[in-house]
Length: 248
Image 1 (tube, rainbow, N blue to C red):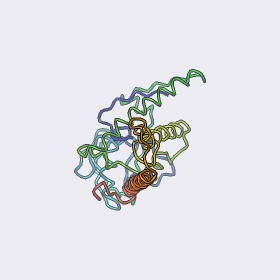
Image 2 (image 1 turned 45 degrees about the vertical axis):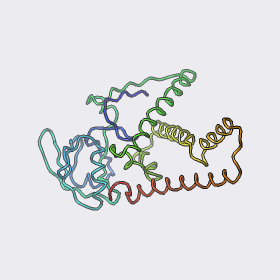
Image 3 (image 1 turned 90 degrees about the horizontal axis):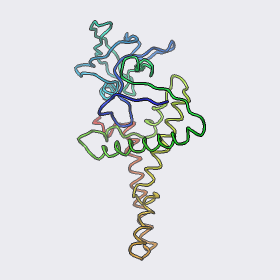
Image 4 (image 1 turned 135 degrees about the vertical axis):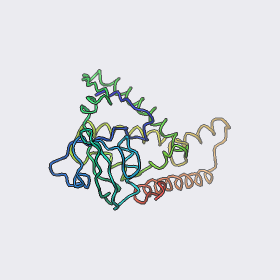
């Protein structure tokens, strides 16, 4: 399945999709549904904040946990205001449209192409390489405070939330799993002691200088590497649960 997305300035790891309410599940009991949001409502503001994409909604409500917000919408071209309660996770529970509907709106150009087993191998490699390139470009943004990308860093909770809880989608599941594999492979090559990238760095140093690092140095380097990795894990998961880097 190949999807050509018409978007600009996409946030880290998340596709920018228009703030249009999708179809409700018959068993849905989210606050957005209770507030009166309906299928195909277009969200234009939350409180006084202009909204264009769904991630704009999430970014704002994340700081309004357990509080009421005013959702301004267009329903069949007519403006309306609804009062909604943000849940304890910082979400309203708004469903998305499906890919076909985004295609019909002109936001995506969706093309579905089926490949045989042998045809799929080079296509899979190409997709993995392109995914890696995209991730590296997005990874760089974390170190540019002006972009605010560091606020989107998350841990296990964020990883779990990427998978749909409404229905099982094998294509989505394996695509996300493959992306995680590519990300972990890249992270493992970072020049941090305790990772393979750190070992490669020491090996290259030994090849260039002709001198092997002492066991004591390697031991201390391993400890420093573990401290760095544990600190990053603590920050990422703290960002998930407490919003340390999100100004909460």
